[in-house]
Image (cartoon, rainbow, N blue to C red; front, side, top):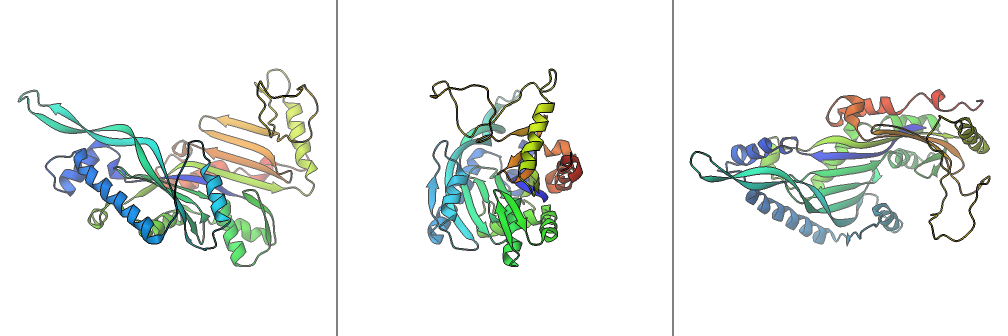
Length: 356
């Protein structure tokens, strides 16, 4: 099975990402005499108040994330006790540093009169992490900034999306950690994976934005100030379940042996499932290891990484991660989607041939 793994999408207002666009918004669209951050404060307070009223009205659990806490672990714990098919599980709060617009002072060199000037800066801003369960995409999260220009981040999992139609249609399958171990109708599963498109991701965003408080007014949106999507980080995977799991281990051991010659890789590592530091008790020496080790092959080039490893001892997993989708597709917005898929998913035969 090959398809989309995790996708991290930027949700932004295209006109509000540069100073001239912000000035036009306040002076031309809203008819203000000056563009100033003092005009952004009331918008932020109104948006935060609307979010807090929404949380109270819907009875949504709110939690503040602690430093170093894995948000996915918190979500997984809540999902075990969450029966609803489509609802917000909880909303988290965290403070993170982001790009913002602030007002500075400039002075006219001829008259000496000072005037406000918008400049881009950075500041710690409160964020709302909204964790819903969707009928089609299952759990995902939408991170909302509470300060102008109110950008957001959308994160979803393609494997969760792929498993939903199988469950609805009663097709027998077994889950593999972030994947599928076996499926009664594998061709249908692959067709579902192929059907995840930029349009469906966009529809998911619009659907939940309609349910949540919006930082911009209806008049702003009618004037054309609408959110756009752009891929920030994309992961694609090829999962090949082996009839004999030992084949996968043989494959990796041969790859490592073939690349131990001088002048090949700069380093070969074994990744243990425990942390070993200077004070760890015990005797450590070079030996043949068969348990507790996950061998992997990593290929990196600029902002793209390909990782191949033996997943849960059952499948060969090839993951391609792209952190610069512009470089891979030469396009902007979610139109990068087809280009990313072409770059990330090579032909199956190029990744694994059981008889080699």
